[in-house]
Image 1 (cartoon, rainbow, N blue to C red):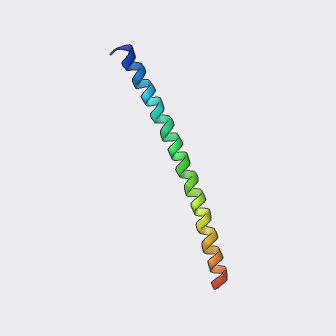
Image 2: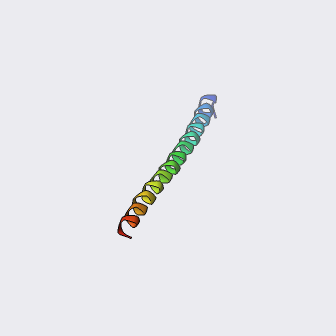
Image 3: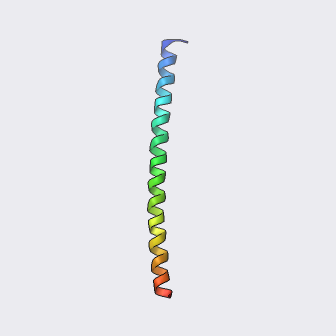
Length: 50
């Protein structure tokens, strides 16, 4: 395997790992924020109807 192919593979793996980390973090943050919104909406509705 040539040096150029090795560099390309290492670069691709590194970029993939970074992308995976960023996406999982962003999805976790989005889930946390949506859970907060859901809790706010349903607690507000429960208080006004209860």
